[in-house]
Structures are given as C-alpha cells and as structure tokens.
Length: 111
Length: 117
Image 1 (tube, each protein chain N blue to C red):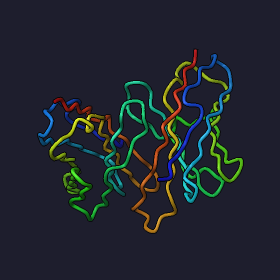
Image 2 (cartoon, helix red, strand yellow):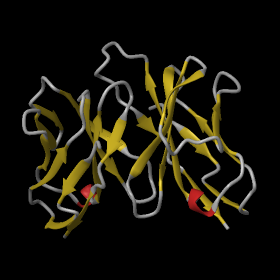
Image 3 (cartoon, one colour):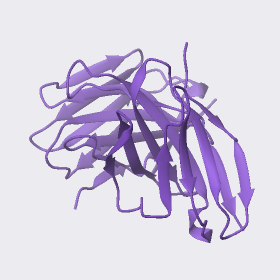
C-alpha cells in the first residue's frame, strides 16, 4: 500500500531558527514529490516539486532534498518567520496522477 | 496572480440531500482535481478530470459522487445523497497542460467546508 509518513507530527521553534521536516514514502512507481504549505482552513500552496533525478530544490528560505534510493525527503526552513506557522505536507505522485498525501507536520514559530 | 476559486465557502446540509460544490479553475489550465480533507486528517485524492472526462478516481469516489464541467469556466462536484461521513473540507485544484509528464504544479482553491447533519 502506498504510504507517506512525516515526522515530527508537530514542532515548535523560535523565530529566526532553522528546522528540518522529514518525509518517508513507500509509493511505487515514483513520479514526483512535492512539499506544500497549508495554513489553517486554507488550501495547500506548492513550495517545491522534485522528480527522481533531482536531489535538491530551493524556493527562497525553503530547501527540499530527495533521496530516491532510500525514499526519503526533507524540507529545511531557514531563518524561520512567524508566518511560517502552518502545516507542511509531503505529497508523492506514483504514476499518472496517483497522489498520496502525508499527514503533515504542524509547525509553530513563536517570538 | 490568477487563482482557483470555490463557492460556497461553507455549506450545511441535511443527510440525504444533494449538494453541488463549485470551482472556477485557473483559466488556461486543462487538468482539474477534487480532494477532501476530513477534520484533523490528511488530504485525500478524489478525482482528476481532463478533456471532459474522468482520468483517475480513488476508491472514495463512488457512485454518490459525480463531476462535471458544465461550461468553459466551472468545474463542479456533486454528492447525490450526502452522508454524515461526507462532512469535510473539499478542495478543488487545477494544473496547466504539462510540458513534461513529471512536472506539474497543482494550484489549490481555498476549499468548501461541508457539514452534513
């Protein structure tokens, strides 16, 4: 069964600090992996998308990595801001439009 | 910046009633999707739609559900006879025609919160 596991489930960090969120998946075949940011009560917003040939992708203060051999991905947030408080969701596509969402990591950035 | 819009933002209905959730995808997009998110749970894929037909659907998308693109701008999700467990946030998404099979960003709408009583 295709699964996407994320850790930690929740995280609290101080404003200005860095953090790294993890994603492990068992989806096969693999097409691409995306990280989304979802504010409470809103739709997910795409941060990065990576195919099997890409190891890293950056979008401003967000940097995603992908190890297709170990089926792991991480999202690193640099110099966190209060507006980074949200759920971060890892989404893996396996084959044509088959997508599996992770349960998300709820990040809270405090002053 | 163009965005996906959804109406209504909230819908309350009685069990057994039919509901239609509406979405206006980004104008030059050709692929359309519906997802749902039960409160406190992860987002789940329901269906994808291209060229006026369903291209993929999940096991959740049973005969109670249907999708339609009635005109050039709207994309609708109909639930024929709602059940209590249909209560969730429903997200519409769209993506443009792909230049590469593996590169496609889906843009999500703000969601419709459906409550079935």
